[in-house]
Image (cartoon, rainbow, N blue to C red):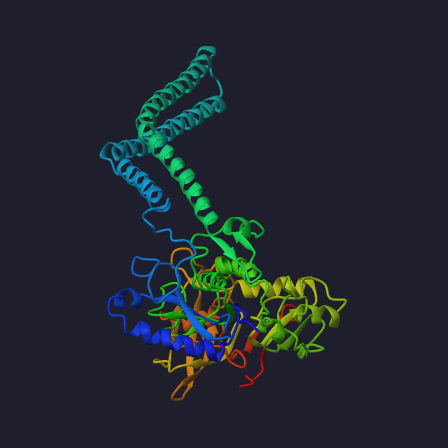
Amino acid sequence: MFTYPFCYKPHELSVLAAEEVKTYLAEQTAWREELAMGKMFGVLVVEDEQKQVGFIAAFSGILAGSNNHPYFVPPVYDLLNPDGFFKPEEEAISQINRQIDELETHPEHLAALSHLQTLSEDCRQALADERQKLKQAKALRDERRQAGNLTADEEAALIKESQFMKAELKRTEKAWNQRLSEAQQSYDHYAHKISALKQERRTRSAALQKRLFEQFSMLNYLGEEKNLCDIFADTVQLVPPAGAGECAAPKLLQYAYKQGWKPLAMAEFWWGDSPKSEIRHHGQYYPSCKGKCEPILKHMLQGLHVEPNPMIEQQLQKPDALDIIYEDEWIAVVNKPANLLSVPSKDDGYSIYGLAKARFPQAEGPLMVHRLDFATSGLLVLTKSKEAHKKLQEQFSQRLVEKRYIALLNGKVAHDCGTIELPLSMNLLDRPHQLVDYEHGKPAITRYEVLQRTETATRIAFYPLTGRTHQLRVHAAHPDGLHCPIIGDDLYGTPSTRLFLHAEYIRFVHPITEESVSFTIPAPF
């Protein structure tokens, strides 16, 4: 059966092929600097019409400024071909970018913008001062009226003063508005040009992308063809993301189908340094990305006998009931096994939540206060009433709940203890992977303490101060974290029999009795 591309252990033939490619890459002195920055490569083991077995190789994206290199299969469509439509139109869009940059940095534009901003602030302050004067004058008039004994002439004078000051405020507003209008017109002279150019850029870029994706006519094993626009039309994304069709896996399958070869096994590996945001380890195998490749491969693999998803097989090992370690009228604490969902997914309703609903049919409220990853084992707290849920959820949101996780890491952690702060965000093109994102990520903080070291591994205690998705896994694996992935982490490290991460300890204030309670369940490894 052919490799399931989104979760796999590489077939031994794929490993042999990949080792040859790695040897070839290590010998390429001309690409050394670019390869050091990191790139994904892929191998596809194939069988030809004479039943001979061999392999082909590919790289994702562009290598050393080119789509074509003799050792690797060609791209599905060469967008860098000087005789094609892409390069001239790309240059036209680049020219628009240069025009926008020239206008945005033009001294007259910057001066007009600065003048408008300064004038707007001066206007705001001046009108605020006038309104304050109006308010103070009104207060004085009110005091005089409250004192009494005003003659008719004095009252008329107060009314006239009020009318004059209101009229003066309107004249002041009109004068400022005139000055602002003139300043706005001066600024708009450039702003409208910039806006028009940006609209032209959007229109031409969208048209270029659409035309480009229409050139990617992807085959499957049945000989059927679909371009990328048609493939992604049935997805949530609707349109292909940038770079779709240029990853190694689609390139390999497309070339094999065109030669009439039968794909047998595939693997992709990373070569070089890890990117700053993602986690990639030199020489390690990785599944195909979900955002770009999943819809494409869903089409391209039709007709092949593909291995079942190993994740589904893991989920088939389902307990019959909750492993409850504590229970009272308001809460329950359970020991979640590894490879069981905390809450149902769209594909599988079996989860801790489902077992809890069956075990506590009279429970009110959401039941789940927090979650553990599918692969993580350990302590999980459930609530049986709305009041208990609300109060306990407040403790989690205010970071008042103490938690300790035990993990085995692949490698030796240098320091005995410390704190990791790496902000995280979802990788929208490769869910459920998380990115280290210093610009848009949410704060993620983890304290750690080394418990034991061996020659190849570290036993560690994690104390998460925040509760982001995959926080401990990313903080362990990322080069700016501990640079030692958790053993068995199929997303950020190397797959194993299980993910060696366990929620060992939790302490919180009981939501009803208000007593401090704590629970411990030793790690099973």
